[in-house]
Length: 216
Image 1 (cartoon, rainbow, N blue to C red):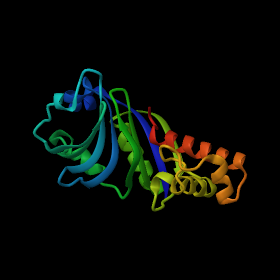
Image 2 (cartoon, helix red, strand yellow):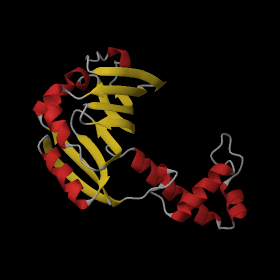
Image 3 (cartoon, rainbow, N blue to C red):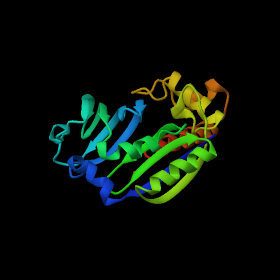
Image 4 (cartoon, rainbow, N blue to C red):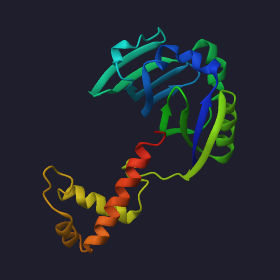
């Protein structure tokens, strides 16, 4: 099993399906895929909508095939939304081809200029998905990473040492405001030198931010 991340420049024919979004959003980021059924053309997910300056989520006129669209949280121009929609009838035959034994993963980001898609699966199935996306546009970048799973998936990009120190920092109030403990006190508590602790924390923070902002 490997994780594949694709960057795709979508063709104009495919982008026409998103006419009601393109002039109002900066990007849509998949946060969690709750349900996907290619036979019934149903997709349900939690996604972050980043609106362009001057627009709000209320400016988006959702078409009939969007059955549920609820704003769960708003912060500035970022809206966390629950959305349930059916695939376009014109894409129903294509959608069924995507019914492959893979895991739809994150980061997955959609903008006017590109789409970033992450999927995990066998070599054979990843090749099938890659070929399918080539029918929708030009694949400009392909990368592979080791598929790692843990109870805290956001931390899977870290080394064991980085993860342990980051969790210890959180538990001991290093990230509280105001801080309950400084880097010197934290290093003494976990039995490592201050430079080592600070270095691991900085590397962990950079990796997490880089993973969260993939595609930006």
